Amino acid sequence: MQQKLKYRLLNIVTVIAVTMFFSCEGNLKEVQKMTAQNKMPVGVAEDFVLKYTDSTKLKAVVSGPLYEDYTNQTFPFQEFPKGVHVVFYDDSNQKSTITAKYAIFYSKSDLVDMKGDVVLKTYDGKQLLADQLFWDQKNQWIFTEGPYTFNSPDLNMTGIGIDFNKEFTVVNSHGNSGTAVVKEETKTEEAPKTE
Image (cartoon, rainbow, N blue to C red; front, side, top):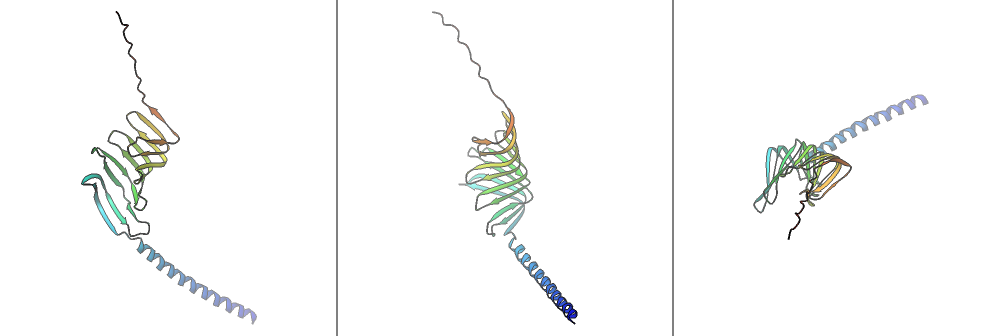
C-alpha cells in the first residue's frame, strides 16, 4: 500500500513539474517575442547616401547598402550591417575616405566602431588598414588596439595598437616595426673669401 502511495505521489509531482515546465516555456517565448519587438529599428534605408553639413558646408558623405536606425533604444545607436563608405571633407575641401564591412555609431557617446577590412585613406597619400577601428567624434581621436598597417609616402609600419588625431599630426603607436625615408641635408661649403 505504501509503495502504491509513493508511486502515485511521484506521478502527481511529475505531472505538475511537466505542466509548469511547458507553462514557463510558453512565458519565455512570449518574453523573447516582446524583447525582439523592442529591438526593431525606427528606420531602415537601403542603398542610402547621407550628407552632413555644417553652416551649409559639406563635411561628410556616408553611403552603403543598408542603414538601420535604433535611436528608440535605451542606449541609441545607428548600424551599418552590410558595410559603409564615408568621405570626409576638411576645411580646405580636401577629401579623405574610410570603408568598413560593418559599422555602428553610438550617439550618446559619439563613438563609431568599424570592423572588417577597415581602410582609411587621407587626401595626402596616407593609408591605414585595420581589422577594427574606433573614431571618438567628441575628441576627434581615432584608435585601434588590434593589428594595423600604416603606409605613407615616407613611412611604412605595422603593429598592434595605434591612436592619433584626425590630422595625423599626433600619433601614438604601440609595438610596431617598419621603414622610414629619411632625407639627408647636404651642407655646401663656402668658398674661401679673397681680399
